[in-house]
Length: 254
Image (cartoon, rainbow, N blue to C red; front, side, top):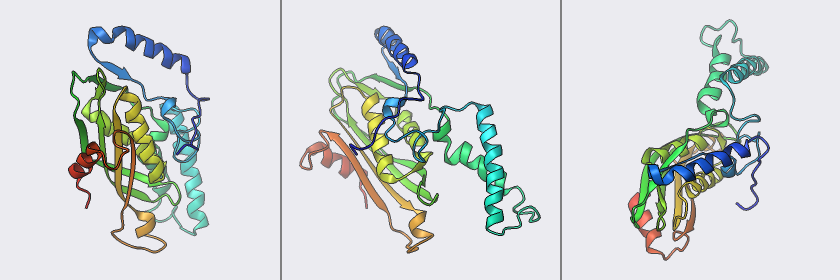
């Protein structure tokens, strides 16, 4: 994964630095932190199918303009496939439905910024924290077919480190999942986000188990095949480490 790179051109670095300084000054009073998901977590180039869009995040007006443009373009696409969508009562609104689905749902992670991630002092807890069976809906950036499955995340907070608000792990999965994706890069992106937010951790591990419609609905058309990817760091990298064994025993991949 070392060949992936960060594109910082479309992000306000000073705003992030000011935000971070404000967090540091207030952390002792509030006894918690809020961390922005920002350009440091992007592993692919801006504009790529599994990255953020140029100008990210987009305003509501910009997204509406995009929907209008995509609606027009998808109508042309259906024309090329000789679909009489203008006269078919079941298809006449399809170009706009598809455009809205991409912008507001399937690819919303490309256009809409995620809220800040809340984390809290670990208060000396040094065990593994695991959230398993996080639902994943994503889209293959090769054939634009659905990727569906489960994400399992584990990490060990460091001494004086942070633990992440539980639902925020789900939000991280949603942010990166709701883009075009290949599963390998998606696994890395989620891992890097948790690793960044959970500062001074002793290890992070992310496993995704997912089925791909590009396998079941086209090509070989094989039903039931699933793909398993894992990205691990720190204590979880060693295959003989008890933390890694405890994680995989807990998620019980069949």
